[in-house]
Length: 589
Image (cartoon, rainbow, N blue to C red; front, top):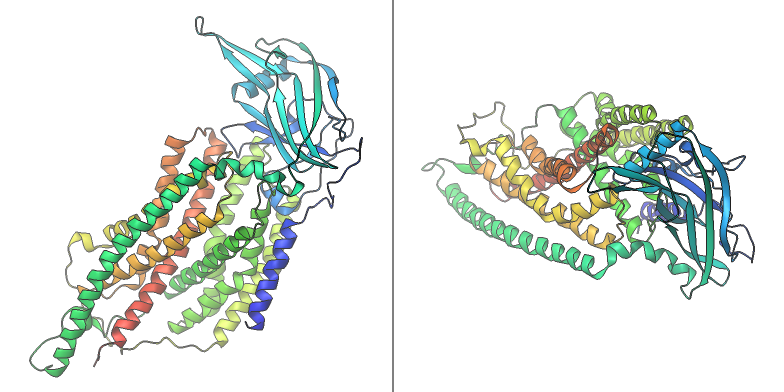
């Protein structure tokens, strides 16, 4: 392995250790009666995961001087806003109906809590880094009269399990029988209380997080996952095998035919893909945009691969708060040099002249739409006073990362690409004037070809998409990264193969403008994923409201755009390799 390779591996290891380290520095060991930290995180509608608010935005019992917990970048991006909770859950101390506080709710506070109960608000807390959830209340509907009764839970029971001197598990229960009626607009006196029960368990500390991954690794879910993988593999193998057989047979016949033509060029006229050998390597229009897409797509592909490597080594264990977001920001910044090098070197291979403008274009191609989307959504979150609104300090940190890491590495990559002096390797000379493309049927135009190109890769991944969406936009935990990695590899292979097949069929009918077509066909899977987003939102989820809708479609549009760039790059690279190969195999005059 080269020094650069070793350095890259070491960098990943350091990053994994940094992400896996606990921010508070606690060793999670306690003595009897020791204070164990409990932090209240957020509240919000159960069906709208992005619409969350600070815990004390609702009139709960609060300590005299609540302190916010210092959080890492990824935790803030995740919408976490941890603050001290007034419950005293000291290690191995049982408590029975301890009064938390007494207060009288005003009419406005009652109306606010009633609205929260109607929207199925839940709360989230962290106890010794273990997450716990509970609902604020419940709504009882009278079937006969059609009236609704709103009940607010006023008592919480904590069941805590320990092993030796460490906390292993915590569960929270709310008792509907101990609730207060907040149906009417009037002042309500209320007494909040809680109880604690400690129980011994044999579960080791190292396995305490396994409870949270059971939902995704239960036998029936694993069976569905593996069934979808096998189904995708069989479908893909059959279809790609069928296309490969046809393609290889046709290519073999073409090579035999063209070798005979070389012996009698005077008697026969060239036809098919050999006929356009003087145009097939003619550089595409909009060179700067084309090179920027290839550079950005290559960076996003590298980003996806590094994220999978971190996932496979166990960095993203359940509820390692913000680790994924931290990894995305840091790795994207570190891989910007790949985008700069790839875009600039390829742009100069295409005989481009203004490489500086191309480098700026590359840096803005993905970050630009993402930044505009973030500005709009952050404004919406501020208007809603939601925790999704990033603090000013966090925005400054992100800007500094972009200014001090992303941009310099992009420029350094561009300079390295400019100095690489690589030439475009075309096995055939390009003629001075392009040949006219013959009239082709409608199904050989760009949009029908994109529809055909995107359907097969999408069919291989769409079952897995449901589980990913349920994790990102729901409360499911996704932990089976090995299966997801297999699906990702299948996606790359199928995208490459389908794009190559369509590129050959395009050249066979003497259409030499394959450059842009290969990018559009390869990236068309991203458009299919966007249509699935629309289907998922309306048919598979209960999300509602302007904020949640804008967050879902805003960020998923950026994700689908990223897939378009990444898979478009894969399609083009595969097609370029294929086209170079077939034209090297024949004699072109």
